[in-house]
Image (cartoon, helix red, strand yellow):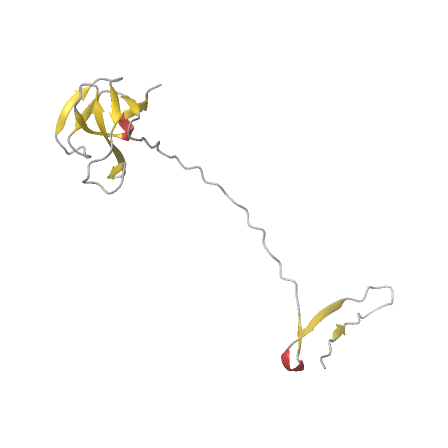
Length: 133
């Protein structure tokens, strides 16, 4: 048979003071272990605002934000195929089989494979493109 114990602590002083009590929980073997209510900190959520680059999909049409160079590969070190003025339209194409992810990221910059209005196919960084509205 298990017995539950309650420890009553008597306060020193007069009868008009409240007598505090502490609840205890019996543990295995008949040992009494006092229980306490832990203070739980309420977590506060902080939302960090992140700048997300737009994702262009194959078939999307965009225009050059400024004068741009069309590259043979996803790198500013690649050979330049042609130069286009601001406002020149481009259509986003699927990446070539040389890349596992798309858009291609080189040195922290996203690159897209595009077809210019004159039919030339090459690469431009995402920063060079503006949505064609």
